[in-house]
Image (cartoon, rainbow, N blue to C red):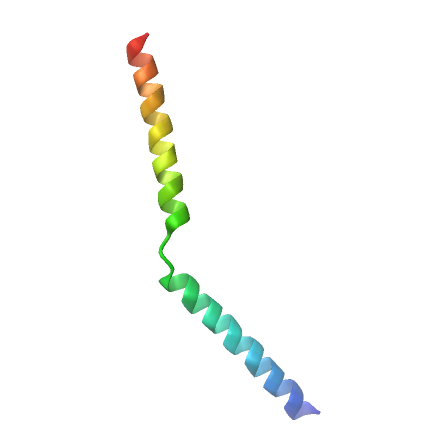
Length: 52
């Protein structure tokens, strides 16, 4: 019984490790798109202030 529980715990830990490694290697698309959107909004606000 204990061995079975230990094996399951090992599998869970291994899956968590794999998920963490995937996240580390993943390209930060979300951060880049949010940054670009923020930059565009700032640019539009600047243009609006200049045009007035």
